[in-house]
Every structure is written in C-alpha cells, then in structure tokens.
Length: 325
Ligand SMILES: NC(=O)c1ccc[n+]([C@@H]2O[C@H](COP(=O)([O-])OP(=O)(O)OC[C@H]3O[C@@H](n4cnc5c(N)ncnc54)[C@H](OP(=O)(O)O)[C@@H]3O)[C@@H](O)[C@H]2O)c1
Image (cartoon, rainbow, N blue to C red):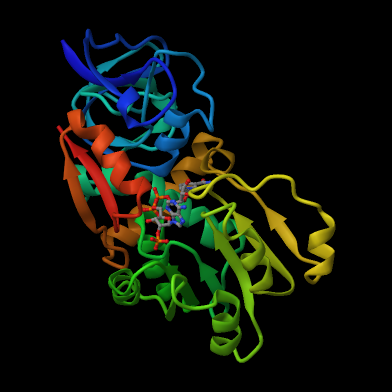
C-alpha cells in the first residue's frame, strides 16, 4: 500500500485526508515515481479551495516532486527503472509516496542535485526561468518590482535577477523577510506594511519607475503594480495569493501609460518536451553553478499537509517548504 493525500470536497485545509491506496500501474507513456520529497506550492491551495477546479473529486493534490522511477509503462524511451528524476507538471497527486504521471513531464535529475532541492524548486525554478528569461527577456540594467520576494518563487528570482545584473526591488511584509530578500540578491526591498509601495519605487528609481512588475499577489496589488511601471512597460500577473484579479476595465492600461499586461503559466511555457528540457537545462545550470541556492525553510511529513498549507497561506513561511517521505 502507498500513502497519499486526497480531498473529496473543496474548502479549508481540514478537507485534506490521508488515504492508503495501491500504487497505480503506469499505462502507455507513463512512469511511476517513488517520491523521496514533494514540493508545496501556492497553486495546491488554489485547487484545494476550488479557485482552480480539480478535474474530478476525490482528487490527489500537488504537481512537484522528486524520487526514483519504480515502474515504466509501454512506449517510454527516455526513462528506466531506478532513474533519479524530478517533475513539476502533470496530473494532481504528487502529495503521495508514489505518483504515476506522463513520462514526458518527468526529467532525469543530474547527480549533483539532491531530491530535496529538486522537490523544493522544480516548479518555482522553472517559473523564474520563464518569467525572467522568456516573458520579458531581461538583459541586465533593468529595474524590476517583484512581489513576495522572500517566498519560494521570490527567493529564486532575487538570486537569478542578481546574476543577470538586474535591479530587483522586492516587496515583503516584515523586516526579517526584507533581510532574507537582500541576502538573496535583491537590490532594495519595500515593506508594504509600513511603506507606500508606489512612492518608494519612485524614490528608488529617481522617478523612472520599473521596466517590469512581476505580481503573484493578484487582487490586492493589481493597481499598485500598474502604478509602479514606466510608460509602455510590462505587467506580469502570475498568481493569486490574495485572490484573483477580475473585473478589469482594459482602458486602465491606457490611463496608466499604454501598458502591456500578460497572465502567464508554467504549463503555457513548458508546453512541449523540447521547451521543458531547455528550461530544465538552464535552471539546473543555475543550481549546479551555485548561482541559485534553495532555501528549504520548512519540512513536514505528508500527513501534515494541511498544517503546511495553512502556514503558506498565512504568510508564515519563507523560501520553500517540502514534504519528506
Ligand atoms: N503562473 C505561474 O506559472 C506560477 C508558478 C508558480 C507560482 N506562481 C504563483 O507565485 C506565487 C508564489 O508562490 P509560492 O508557492 O512561492 O508562494 P510564496 O511566495 O512562498 O508565498 C506567498 C507569499 O505571498 C505574499 N502574500 C501577499 N499577500 C498575500 C495574501 N493575501 N495571502 C497570502 N500570501 C500573500 C506573502 O509574502 P509577504 O508576507 O512578504 O507579503 C506570502 O509569503 C503564488 O501566487 C503562486 O500562485 C505562479
């Protein structure tokens, strides 16, 4: 038998239950991974609460993990039993001892990258890869605003932006988070619980404002973020930590300076095997060169998935959280 987390109705963290089930045999094109570690991401909360609908209920949860391939379905050519692997996409169900998923979503993990680092950062690291290198290909010299700079995605973004020669201004909610973002390479931080974000950006940039704003907070920060941009600059709205941005009058982009806006996702960028491999190569290089280090601040057993999600949702975490099996 194999332990997994599932939910039969959407709601608070109390809907998560631990169940014992037989590990699912992989079908054609699939592999089964015996997870060594599993990543916690904000998107898991969107599925649990119903903001993003799960394809069916009961449903597993989670899409990020690392472990060893322990069964291989027909027609899989790039993986074999015993391979060390990681994944960040595919069907819900990574919160489990065994996860069966399409082999095309699974990549071989270089020996130098341990399971915990991979599980803590595959989804977040590939997200930063596309945000900084594809959505807006930063060249160096730009000034960007990045919300939640001490979080899982934010901690990687601070380090990556620094290596690109980009001035990252990070928003945070406490002095401790500010210190962490600076240690990770942020150029400046703004504690939005005490400071006016737009005014502070104006001061820090001598009135120039930002080339790009990366906003994963959503509802609470939408307008503030637009006000931090230069004319004709890019707003990247990539998350809903405070709730989704809705009811937007597109005319606001005109009023605030002929702005551009995009709402990207990892699945929209890593949408072919070639693109996934390209993004992994670049991300793994960042890890192997030591330019990006992963801060695993919180470790939980799978059975405490609800507790871990509550801490993430309550802004009590920094860096990455993983489940250790
Ligand atoms: N589109 C994509 O492809 C993609 C991929 C990965 C992640 N994401 C998004 O990126 C964001 C970060 O994900 P993560 O897993 O690394 O989480 P995280 O950044 O570690 O945690 C969320 C952080 O957001 C900040 N926050 C601001 N307002 C909040 C609110 N009302 N409720 C909760 N948190 C709030 C908090 O930092 P402060 O206390 O410093 O404000 C909190 O620690 C999420 O929105 C996620 O959905 C998007």
